[in-house]
Amino acid sequence: DLFLRFFLGLSLGTNQTLLQGLLTQKESWQQTNQETVQYIKEKIGGNLTADKLINLFHCLGEVNDCSLVEEIQQSLSSGSLSTDQMSPAQWSALVFILLSSVKDLDVIDLKKYSNSEKALLKLLPVVQTSNKVLLSVCNLSEKSCELLSSVLKSSSASLRDLDLSNNDLQDEGVKLLSDGLKSTKCVLKTLRLSGCLITEEGCAFLVSALKLNPTLLEELDLSYNHPGEESVEALTAGQRNPDWSLNKLWLEPAGDRWLTHGLKKYSCQLTINEETINGKLKLSDNNRKVTCVDEDQKYPDHPNRFDFWPQVMCTDSLPDRCYWEVIWNGKVEISVTYEGVQRKVKSNDCEFGFNSKSWTLSCSDEGRYSVCHDSKREYISSSSSSSPAHKLGVYVDRSSGTLSFYRTSSSTPVHLHTLTAKFTEPLYPGFGFWPGSSVFLCSAEP
Image 1 (tube, helix red, strand yellow):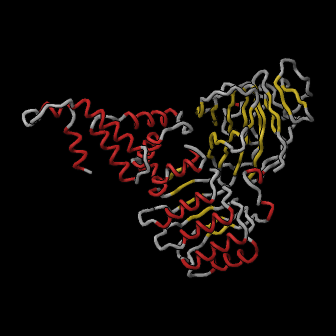
Image 2: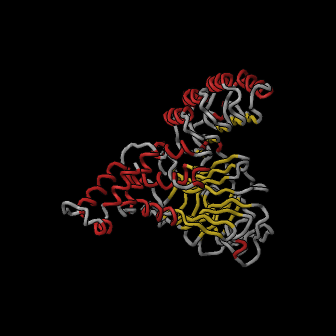
Image 3: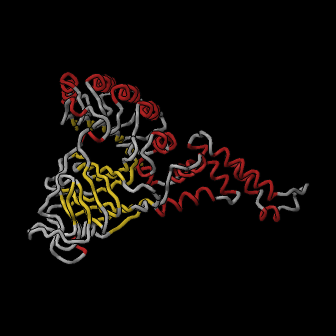
């Protein structure tokens, strides 16, 4: 590999000039280099190991062609990377960039690139060399478990923390994953399978794997599943067993009510708090729809009402995990906020996202999205949309400190962004509006 890179370096025009006294025949090195670059790029688009991929990108560097890497790096830096239409070669460039970064190899979060099984397959070389891999809510299936099981069995893998929460893996997926846990080469210490549609059958596979490899896992999260009494007893007994390394185990909440596909298992019903609604906001459809209008609605004065900004909050605080959907149009702010957010002052401090008490996603019909907290705004998408109305899903996990937004117009949710924070108070849904815009609260039925 090193000789190949050295040889390619000799083919540069500047080096050819220095070596012209040694050359026995004259060729068009510029044309040869172009053909070489094209050949390497075709190879890069194939299914390669991490070592071969890295070497080929170094080969491109030797002939001064860094266009693929620079293109992806620029998209990453600007926050405009869209993996939907990426070519195999561009995926390989992303893998090369991540493999070359010590920071990215410490923690890899698949949702930053795409919450899909395809993305996991493309980024598998990165997963294999990372210490912590976050794959929650990535639309993964048992096929992904087979891939991850092969990673766990690999002697070159360094994966110690794996989060697969809220994927519909079911018992068959856990069975495949358990095969990897049985391997003596596996070094995994933390496994999160919360909300993965696992029953007693799937938990039995995990128990079997841990009995064979009792010093492996130190933390196991099986909350929001239906493990059954026998598996619960076996796991809690293992936790008490001094031969087991398991010292943190989450099994609650549990029950068959959590065996619902997707995030809708956490659905909650939102109710508009009429005491908070601004005078420029009109209620309709049994108070399920809020529209920003020109004429003042003459609501009575109330200490909880937003006097200046066209905003409204919901009545009840959110449970530890919750999910809801809205249909919106125009330009709106979809938010969560602490109850103590200011409401009476004519300043930006009262606007959702422009204070330390609220977090918001700004949406517009032009397809522009941004997130904002404490006046710090980050743009996350610039894709256009011709649809007059849009459906958005919001998932909050207070314990893990995550707030995620999804486009849900299609059958498969598309991840927009996840905000992380240390939530220290109860959270309330809130909505902000621009003139003519509206939000409709969808049904909470799973």
